[in-house]
Amino acid sequence: MPLDMKGDWNKRARDDARFYIATSIEGTEAAFDASGKSDVGHFFDGLGELLHGDQVVLDIGCGIGRMDRHIAPRVARLVGIDVSGEMVARARARLGDLGNVEFVEGDGTSLRPLGDATFGLVFSHIVFQHIPRFVTRGYFREVHRVLRTGGEFVFQLPEAVPGAPQDPPDDDTFEMRFWREEDVRAELEACGFTWLECRRFAIDTPDLAGLNYLRLRVRK
Image (cartoon, rainbow, N blue to C red; front, top):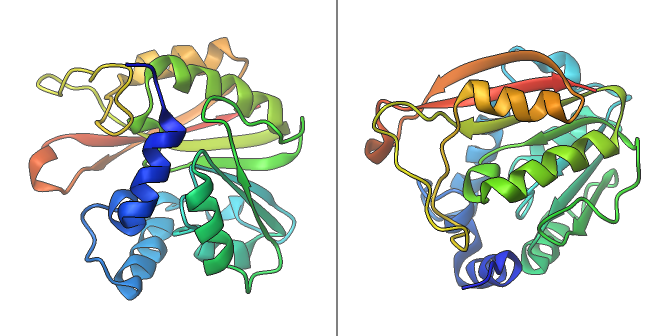
């Protein structure tokens, strides 16, 4: 089957957007919002200096703005991009009270129509793990394009350790892909990024116990 990321995620958004964004969270709006606040604190632990009043931020795979609600008040401007037009429409409705936020529908393989050297920070959380590797590599190149010189890219991937699941087929847009630190570092440096750090966080869901998330940080 051909890759249909847009169709797949539009269907998931229509079926149950909150579930497919954060599958382990109770399905209420309050719990969903609280999970966004918690994940912002966890994801940006030790990186608070990146969220400041002059910062222009891009969130790749923004969904319905789960984390963006809690980032936007700390920065000058935030743009969320998502392959799903259904997700984007819901994000606009949920965060319509925030004047410094914009949501854009993407094509699922690039960051068009976003301009070159636009952002000081690009981040992505629990997104690239669902994407075939060749698509993720394309996104790395696109992030380099849209970042300003000196801007940073911070994102998460699950770590490939002994016993980690093998990749699903490339037309699967939901099951996870696991990466080795040295492999993702090589991909990023090939795009022209300067490596800054990799931090590991334990995965606390029962079916993935014993594995880690990698939080990768690079600079243009």
